[in-house]
Image (cartoon, rainbow, N blue to C red; front, side, top):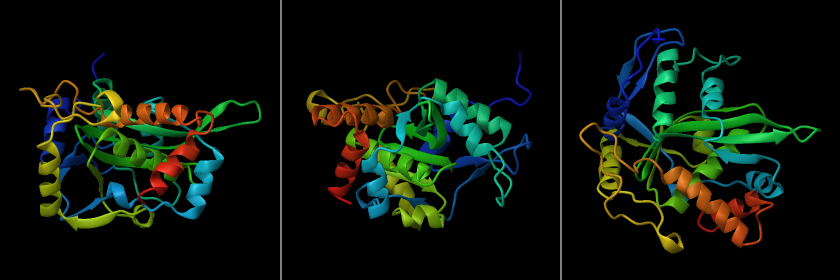
Length: 265
């Protein structure tokens, strides 16, 4: 069955991100998209994530169960859903389907925060999604239905990117929420320089012992879809869980995340 609105071709999306631009729509029902290149770009330096005392306590208590790529469709649907007092969502049906396709190809990722009810059934209460290629992750949107749910997801994302050898976390536009967590605005020209520098060092995952390797993988082919590109986030996430288990913290990985972020934050 054909889609009502054709998706944005994955290779076009990835080439746009590698050029420093991204798509948006005016509303959820808008079939059209436009390409955005902000004058000021928000990034979150991975070594300057602001881990507040209250957020560190939340992580250590292990209140949330956090996963990677476990519910991508649900996360993007929640991000696109109407919010009380918020402007119309820019995540249209066409954009949503385009990123779902990108996720299926391994180039879009989600981090999910879950809370258990009295019967220990987990419910999705927060998360984020974005596009990953090599050492770069471009965050698209996040949502929260419980206090600190999106902050916890972002903390895990930063820790996973650091563990996976990533270099650049693009937040696109600054908000007070992101600024409180360490995001800063830089000129687009400076962002393009950071992007180019990160792309010059191809990503090949984690070698034995956890060190990041840059040997060959992650390069894009003629269609813009490179084998191995975009896996820094899930690779780093899995490595964090392994590290927590080795440290005897497999039952409370949030405590391990808090420790890893405290070391250089």
